[in-house]
Length: 124
Image (cartoon, rainbow, N blue to C red):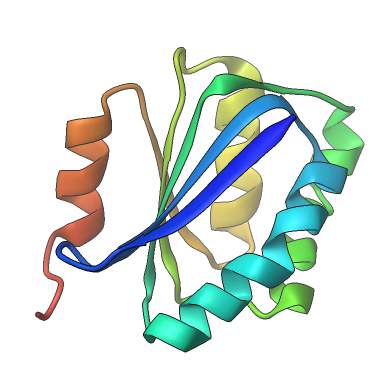
């Protein structure tokens, strides 16, 4: 697994790219650093690129993911676009769990559409 985290200063969002397995453990390992970026750059927009990642683990463990992000300091108000290769039932379930727990999140197969949605209505 590899993770690349960067702040796009021009557009004003944090980009996270994950390669390999994506699980609650993966999320836990990056969530604190993401929260640090959110505070450091005063940024409320995250683009997560999971096109080279595979969602692993049980459906039950997916329920823990929103709490992992909250406990790390990534608040529900942070707008997140997630880009995947294919909108599988597992990814739809992940999206539903986050949305049902009050997060602003949406799945995409196209990175440009994800960026457009993410930055829609953003104040510069």
